[in-house]
Length: 280
Ligand code: NDP
Image (cartoon, rainbow, N blue to C red; front, side, top):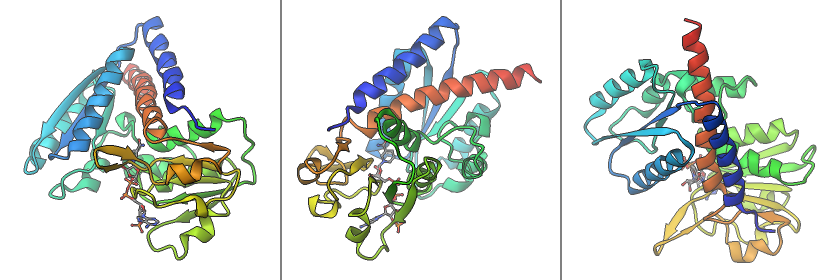
């Protein structure tokens, strides 16, 4: 069955919107975009539109490759401005920026994508302030299915800090046995074939074909690959779909759910910042 990510996204959005309107909340999200990565601009625009639909004010700040100092100054302002509740940095940052240092400078209470070392530490030690948006979207999709995950085998392909590693941690929290694969994994197929849940987080079109998955598997494809003006995931959807019990399409799977999670995390951040400033 093909999972309708847009439908899951819609129900999250509606919940966020009704809470914001019923409680007369005014959440504000700041999005920082640096460099001229086209995809980053598209993702920032998608977030701005989604925010507007649910009553979140979104502000975008643009910087060139050689404006790291300006970027840091703005980040510092946003960190201490009580009227801003969430901060997101579009990735990738330009190579000329010290990305890790920047992530670690985000005020943890506003770090809605959980990218600072502090928030990742909290996540991995079992006391998260926020769950990172795309991994949380994957978890939300899995939880929307009527499936018992305890004891199942999850194979996560990809091990980045923003995606693969936190996804594996969330799969562990579902009491699955987790295998993490990456570019140095020998014979990827040996692992993917044994997956009850296969999460693809690589960024390579057609990495996984039908011969690499077992019948009845659940495939969550987070990959985004542009080819000839179309967007594809990491699996060869045509050959994989008929074997799966569930599969997310690309587009229309993990992506829209991620955008809705940005909204729900911003709402959480709003509540945390307000609580924090009331306690001062
Ligand atoms: P990274 O480039 O940071 O990480 C890619 C990972 O894939 C690395 O761990 C790398 O291994 C691994 N890898 C590369 N080649 C292979 C291979 N041949 N076999 C197995 N593993 C391989 O990417 P991200 O984690 O940031 O993103 C991954 C994908 O997810 C991208 O397509 C991105 O666009 C998409 N994405 C989607 C989002 C959504 O909302 N749907 C949000 C964020 C990202 P190694 O560590 O050894 O280099």
